[in-house]
Image (cartoon, rainbow, N blue to C red; front, side, top):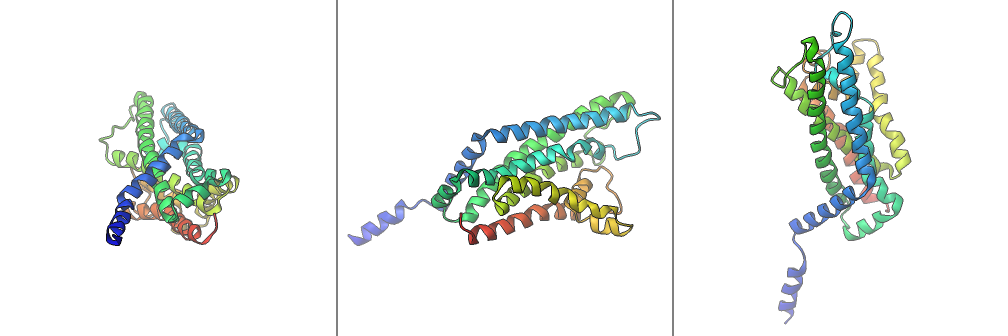
Length: 269
């Protein structure tokens, strides 16, 4: 009789795949149920496409022709502030909103393995922002090139380095969102994490103003400098090449997630 009961108890325990699916489904419901998700994505879309369009228009109507900047990277100049901050804040809110409402206690009670909660949030936020970022990067590129078609300097996706740079732009937005999520899990307070986000993103760029060659030698390890290399059709020779820049860009949010995982297991909810 006891053997039958033991088998029944083991059968009642859901498998790892089922539990992972349930955690992902729960995080997906929470992610799409809050209005801040749609507002931040809307802000990123408007400012990303709009900023790229403004830059393309100014380049198309520049006196003496377009300035001698990278023809792909310049399209994403509009991404250096508002879209990046918007998706970063989206990642922050994916964690801090639960701390603000107290729902995080329920989440950790339902899923005692806290790194599993972090992984599920990363999977949901990362997948959504990756799809959104790729859509936005292609839309911004095509809009910008349509605006620049009159000055005969428009590029197609088949131009050398263009497709790689456009794909990298969407991927970098997803990295920013994941990094913001890690930062939110570390700080656990929305206002504090939102204030810390631009400091983490932009303050390291100050090293680029150091006397050369130290500015580039140190600055190439910053997140945005590495991302800039990835979204450039013609990367700067003084910075890291694309494969190493990709490693640097991934290392920043990965470091935030590792720190978040350690703190989640050691702190109370």
